[in-house]
Image (cartoon, one colour):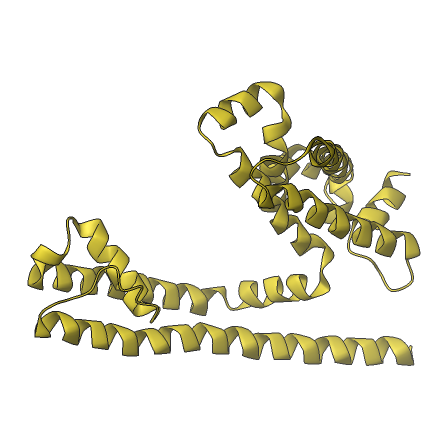
Length: 241
């Protein structure tokens, strides 16, 4: 029985109708549960729907926990499943519904933020998200190197701009904020350099930002294409068999 439950709640196989239905229903529940977050004061009907969705999420969490050993083939998986990344995201999305924690979260106004973590649950039920996850995992070394390079450049350019134009920034964090927006070529315009030296740094940051945005996008796109080609080959092989 546990094995059949595992087959249903995992990503749907081609010929498993129940698994496909479960995936579709869970995606619908996730998106419906996010609708109350778009309202400042949800009506009682939406509050009830929110609670129903919460109980569904709790049931899904429990089912995944009691079948975790089938996923890894190791009985010890039942013990460390709550520490896995997706399980932690599931728990964060559920925690605000516990009465004691709910009052504590409301006191600091983050309950809605915790509920918004439900959107990450969609990663389980979308084949494309799963493929993107595999691509990122395979190219983790390159993407990490690019991220480190971007963070280093943001820090250095913030140091330069803060030294050249100390009057334009109240503190170093504002310089970091400006450097980040300049690197991403957004440039909100709320903070901007006044001197020629500061504008030169801004220009360099914008040019560097174009490369920093293009490189990760190219890596992920190339990896995604390879995954699609590999899946196509696997599907052809399965069709022949």
